[in-house]
Length: 306
Image 1: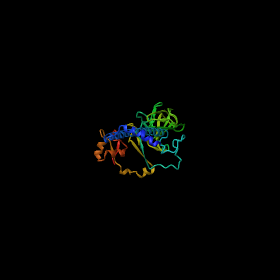
Image 2: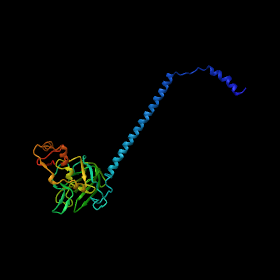
Image 3: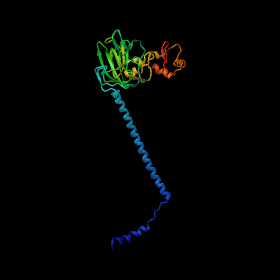
């Protein structure tokens, strides 16, 4: 008797006694539906996990960018971190200034917390035959001086015949600010500072005839009149965005003085009054005068409307 014959003799009768299992179409559908649901739940869970991972990656990447921005402010503009000169580009013939550049000044702090008298303005001094690259604000020795914007201290230095004790801070928005004639430093080179952080104390060091703060705003070494950015009396920027224009663009866009027209502000007048009087939009008035729509006008202030 061979193996096949044994199988037929022993196994087939046993199989014959087993119950026949059968599934209805409905049961098969339910089984398939359960499987599909479980599969869908698993995929959904995986998608959520991937989303969480991607979110964590995005947050980590954002923090990384913020750290790099703080450590290397305006790196896309500046190609050096000079620790010797206020203007490291003075003799750089290769520097190419952008024709225009928008500088966000919305997140700001005034270098002094209360309005103080402006004792000297920006510009050429015929009597001394030199350019005054900033403005002077009257402060007392020991008054706290604050960082105008967030950034990183590029240098602290002392010039006996110049700035005295001074600080240069490079900011994320592309500006650099200079604080001169200080009596004391409250920060060190390479310190990362936040907007409004105390950085020094007012003084009378260097070439100075009385205690004051010499304050400069510079873009790629070019001195900008701080009064073009800030309304020092009202302690606010004129606009949230200051547009830097290269000398070439600024000269080409100059309007002849004969084509300009001004209104002298009277008591109770607002930009709205002036707008109606000369049929010029408030927005255009703000643009012509570097103001905000909410700016408070002063009696006697000249407002350009044309």
